Length: 512
Image 1: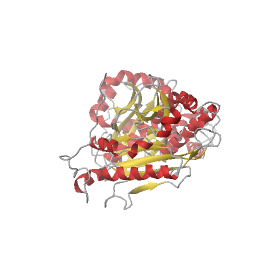
Image 2: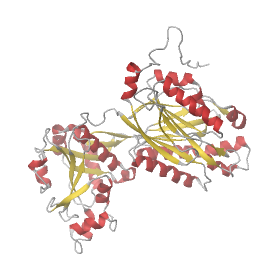
Image 3: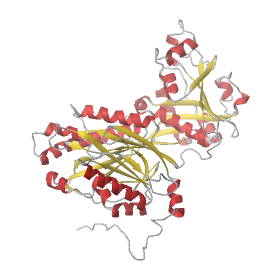
Image 4: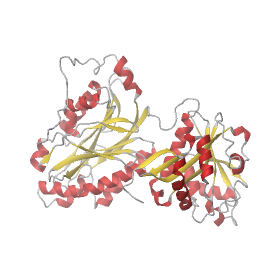
């Protein structure tokens, strides 16, 4: 697997057949399955193009999910694979049906560690909701059953898988993705010798039935944000720090979050290794870990299917200057670097840190976002420029040692939410590092702030953490409410600006 590959979720095309065949051969190696023919794939795409999903790594197909829409009453709970697919003609597809039926899903073995199967299942759920179908149904293989067939009935086998006495990779995966087993199908697929021709009849119920009308891939309206209020604690090694990072990413991802925000300098515990050095040398020693942490965060974003704003870390540029950098890791594998523009007097005197020169927004699959690092949020010009670029959510990783410093960040962040009619999310570190000479105390109360109007909380606070306590914060924000606010709010800060009298603009640096 190429760890630098960019992952994209999209619709399968006829020209993708060669890679589809190659991936299926790898996925079912040793199982005795013949790959889908080009005619089958083309017919599926012709009948139901939006239901044939794939994930590509730098353009190569590495995972597939094939589906039909069926009128389920015509087949009921005692059908076979041939019946549900119309003997592989897919004539059973009915655009007016009520159930999304999964007929195939496979992942290239080299990419199974990235949870691509879960991403495809999530895409199917989104498609089911947006097509306003009542459920997803599938006949699930139980490939390990052949090892237990002499001693267990299919029902006993499934019960033991549920109770974790037996690990069946396929069934365990389906159960963990909120599918339930309705019954056991006998003779479902005679070619499936590993499952002894049995299958589980799986169902996932769409609780939003009759509510949505938009197809998969539509711009999100409700965006779920996860915030990590990070405890500064001694760590023996980089590996231990990464394990803690993964714990939070995993937890926030489990709640279906679109974003995961870490604080500024969350990697500071690693500075203990450099206590014997001067402050200037110690921060540059810490910068030696930045490249590895960036690669790790990018992998986690893809693997856990969540956009990560990776706090900040020190980075030594090609010009030899030290800067404070945040990393946006999109879940498709693409990344963006955001450099702290305004360096604090402390960072200048202790670390000789330089500031960045770019002010811009970033497009994600969950809205247009901006990132400002700590001190930057205290300069309203930056946020206003981003608002003019269409920013909907501003993320602010910060690290403050005193309540005075924290209150500066907090109150300025709340002001940015009101004056720019956007959501602002702040995440800070808490606790102490008694054995780290150059980064010893922290104070924070991470939060999600909103504009102040009738649609939003009256105090402008969507959610906030307990002060100075390690925890996660997860909340939803509604992007269309911002658009309504821009044109129909009690006051309209962006619309009512006197641009005939004043303006805020970005001055581009000239070369030479």
